[in-house]
Figure 1: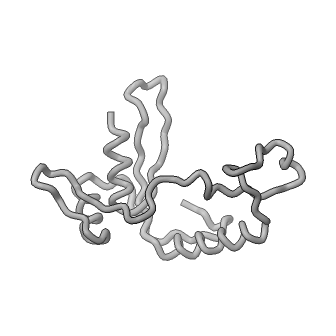
Figure 2: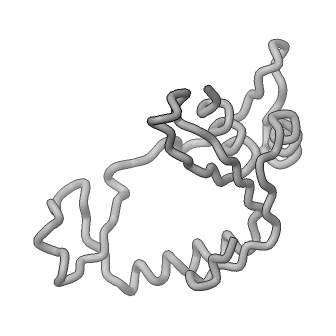
Figure 3: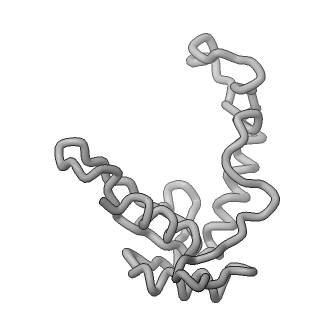
Length: 133
């Protein structure tokens, strides 16, 4: 995986880990993660979960500014702010272990999309199990 054109150097990439290995990674790296009596993985997402529509930002550019419905959800941000955030994300990813997992979002071959999950053990495991047919 080459993300260098985006300023990202990914070092430790782990691909298509088994559910057992993802459990192991989650328990090792996620505070409070454990296995329930039923065998399910218990993990805590923290104070902020999901996606917040009001945190969405779009770089306002002359070529596309009239195509965006600006308002409470689509808020403008300057290119300088975007560049600063991109640098922070790149620095985070440079130090992070990346777990990739191929999955399908459907059991119907004609509707198959091939997303790739990325994240720590808990997120990768959740995506892998949720996407299994």
